[in-house]
Image (cartoon, rainbow, N blue to C red; front, side, top):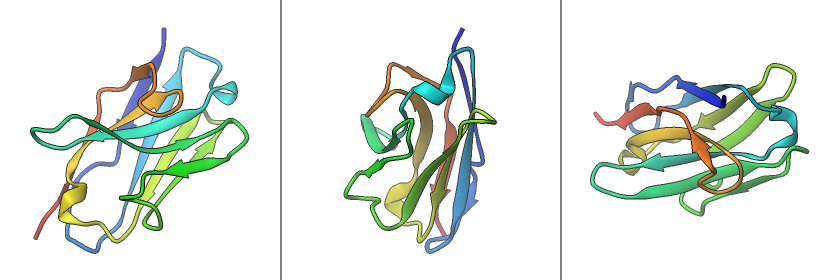
Length: 115
């Protein structure tokens, strides 16, 4: 049974930084691409970033240069380092198994960027 548990979301001021974590279990994590997606209030799912099993990364234009996706395939962990956060980054962030919006997602962690 696939389990994806996100953590690290909180309230942060514009320009601040946060690191999200995702603990994965129930599948062979090292051989799967992984992604982060987000959902802002009243909007649909938005793909944020993906990382291949070998570490190749892709980013949405809206976050490129500010966010960094990484993984530790020994610990079965996925990360999202978010810098220079903007109010429009406010959303529930989900860890996803697979590319783009993935085929399974966790319960999400809330990130709020506000004064």
